[in-house]
Length: 293
Image 1 (spheres, rainbow, N blue to C red):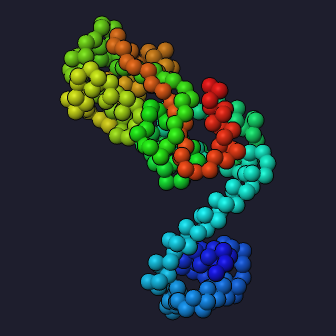
Image 2: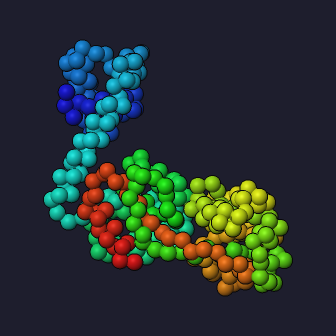
Image 3: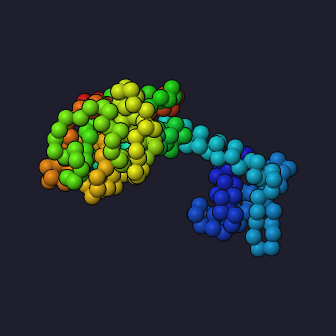
């Protein structure tokens, strides 16, 4: 069994079409068919059924597919490790960032990284803090940059920045007059929340618990999946929200939002990587750059 045979088997299994797999692999149809036949003959197992002009995986083929993928992934990891050991940072660095980080913290640092290491291709994905952490845990991303700590023993966290949360309301809200608020006042308005899994949402709920208020006691009018959506809803109505100061700064300056007199905590931004995965030169360079602040 060779890696080339495994690569051909996986490609055909994913497409269930020999001709399309051959085109994708830049091989002839006959060479693809010969590789599959040799693999089946060598091990005495039928991996595909030929049904009319099409093919389908046999039960044995379906059981073998995850293992074949795993072997190819390990071989790819080994090849990337050898390449990484040979010189300067290169290849692709994948980063999954939470929304606030991706919009207001990360861009300038990505530009600085690109100026220093133009040979590294940066692949950026955006989600909430939970999604960013999960991407690193499952290997979909090399690094994550998130808001607040993530309780995952498999992740190694490095502090890379700081943020301030603020309470905001629209101009029509009664709190817009600037009077000081007590914690109990937070129960006397409707709220717009970020979605579950958001670092901003988690920070708000942690602060409420510290103040002796059950997060479930708030009257939640809407849960929305982005800072921009929350800002638009708060500015248009009479609900309150807690967001990053970075996200609302311009809207406060324009008068679309008002910040009542109620202190909110600061929070940290962390860069997360998997403890057990190889740290490539490209990853190390990003960790070092982020650590510089």
